[in-house]
Structures are given as structure tokens and as C-alpha cells.
Image (tube, rainbow, N blue to C red; front, side, top):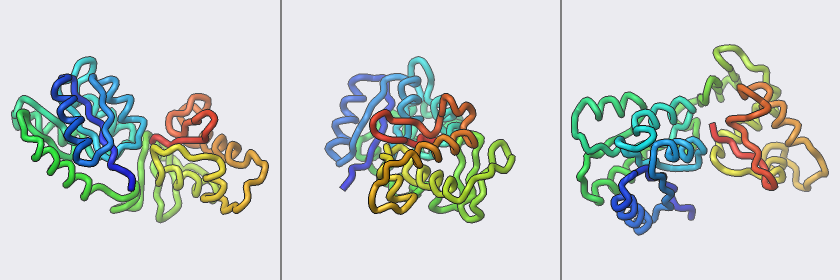
Length: 229
């Protein structure tokens, strides 16, 4: 069984250690960041089930991190931690895309309860609870099998659409070429082919702002590809 993966973005060393230990003891796989910029970099890479994000952070505050994470199309549930307790701060966080908030000081048992509730509410896949998915300027309509970029139709082949959908459904995971040939092409035996590379290159040309420096479909050298939209 895969442990739920949590990103904890908290600059206070003592609290970061305490929460990390408690989360680990409750069955979570925990990664941490000590400032806003590091937190954004980790959050944007995808692969997390939950993000616990402090508001008062060095280098980049939690509000800006939350806004940027959502603008990049990352739908991971975010719980914000604030020491201020002012209603306006809570409202701002929720409007920027946070899913819940907790005011410091708080009991660890309450944090655990909030995280469990967010896990229960989160979609099991990007399109669950809806028939579309968005990242950057790209919108995908799974029911109609249509893709638009900046509001304009993107002409994908059936195979390219299936490949994109597979990437979205496995966002944050590194997928080997063999796995893609099995799951997307249906090959039982692995032929000596650059089919995956050719299709990924074509897909990047159509959805990436700069195909030479991709933001969404990343190459993991020696392993395969990873979608981080």
C-alpha cells in the first residue's frame, strides 16, 4: 500500500520537525521545505497527495505560493497554516485556491483530522468529479476528446490524446518508455522503437509554451518521462 505523500512547507525548524514526526507516525510519507521558493519548486513538481503550507514564509509568502501553484494547474489539496487568526487572511487563502486553513497554535490531532478530511474529499484521478483538466493555458475535455490552448483548438491524433490523458492520470509519476508502450500502445513485447519519443516530441510541440524547454512533460534521463502539469 502506498503511503499518502505530504509536502510540509514551514520555516520554523522546531515545528517542522514536530509535524514531520507526527505525520510519519500517522502513516504519511513526508517531504519538507523551509521557505516559499523551495516549497513552490517541490509543489509544482507534482506527486503529492496533500500540501501543508505556512503563510508566513521567507523568500516567498504562502499566499503567493498557493496562487502560483494553482496557476500552474496543480490541483493537490492545500491546507494553510496561519498565526494571524484574522478572517481576512483566511478568506484570501481560500480565494487563492487553498482547501482549508488552521490557525496557530493548534493541536496535532486537529491537523490530522483536517488532513484526513481533505484526503477523503480529493478526486481519485484528475478528471474525477468532472470531465476536464487544466494546466497552464491548456484545457482538456475528456468527454469530447478535445484540447484547447489559450482558447484555440489543438489538433491531436487519437494516440496523442490517449498519451496526454495517461500522463495526466499519472501526474507526478515517472513513466518508463516500456510502461507507456504497454499501457498506451498495448504492446505485450517491447519492440526496438522510438515511438514514445516521437509522440512525446509531437505532443510537446502542440502543448508546451517552449517545446525545447518543456514545463509539463519532463524527460527523466535514463528512466522515461514525467508529467507535472
